[in-house]
Amino acid sequence: MVESKGYAWVGIDVDARLASSDVPVAFIEDGRFPLADCVADCMLCRQVLEHVEDLHKFATECHRTLKPNGLIYGSHGWLEPDHGVSYFGLSHDAIRVYLEGHGFELLRLEPGLHVGVLLLFYLFDKRVASHLARLVAAVQAVSDRRQVRRPSRLEDVGLSLLEFERENALRMAGSLLWIARKRGDCTTP
Image 1: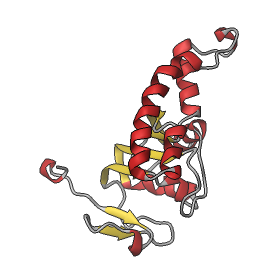
Image 2: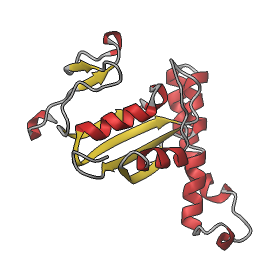
Image 3: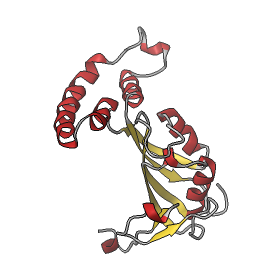
Image 4: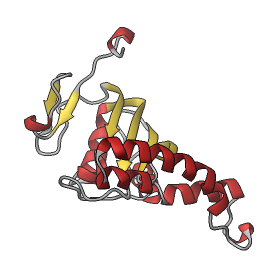
């Protein structure tokens, strides 16, 4: 589908053993993406940040290779159990600070899987977990609104009720979904 719109996929990875055979893959050397400046319209950064050893260098390379106003679509494991080589479990506040501090405007940040649903996949056979996850997600969606811990006075925390409920959902998310836009041009971060 991407190709039918005139775009091309390019995978970037650190290890040939981890690369998918579905798309061409370029390999990172010394933390530098093997792409020219300002060539990418958008990037997909799916469940990557927790496995990046040097987050500053990674964000700098994303910013360098994206065109002005280019987008990054990302997801990040937040309350997931340790898996593979994991360095950072960034909270929703940390994602916001990280992206904005590296020349990006955060356009959207929302909870992915609830941590309870995520843990089912680690505890049970995948078929059983899949059925349990649907049940837990449905119950959770209904109960989240009623069980949110509300402060005695919302004006004390400076949030509307809707904002406060959203913040609680982000705190209990097993993963976070986000979209950010590159600020600046091709010469300034």
